[in-house]
Image (cartoon, rainbow, N blue to C red):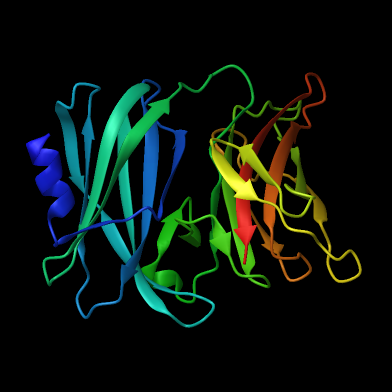
Length: 277
């Protein structure tokens, strides 16, 4: 208790809740790859130093690793830093702590509990979604499977921004000729619909807003057909959503993947939430 009080009162520590994480299937079948995205770190002349530590449920340290730091320029030309912490770990429940330290000695920290479930090797599986922005410079940004992006640690975006969406598809079946194909169905819908009303969703509470149907759209739908060049292995799915026609509010995005294998059709879907300001 004394240590926690001193930790909370340390003026050099800033508790940073601009943090999100996504998990992916690892090349090691016994592990899961996890990427943490920590933002809201003000611009400085020198890159901050970033690290992550993983603990068991009794707070015994299991692993500590340095992270990468990238420059970010948002739609308002405000500059900041994005820290990306990556590791591979066996499925289970863990405490984690992330820290990014500036040259002035200020530490931007966050900690929490995560639960990682194993991926199936038999059925169609999807990674967690990474929402982000399109980078201005592909040479100094986060990338995965040769796709460059600026992950968004916060669920908030400004109306009119282009939101990038990244996920991975696992265990696609082959057709008789060895080819693979799948269809992507994207539905963006308004979470709230009544003014002055609070509702609970995904562990939190959001306030709804009344929309003017003459001035905005409350939903979007997209459909894509994909034909991966490779005949085996994970497939990266990447697309963008134009928010210019959506009114400021909270939205739910459902991404459904349909395996177009002719002999055994299967599907899976993954949800995410974002807020337009």
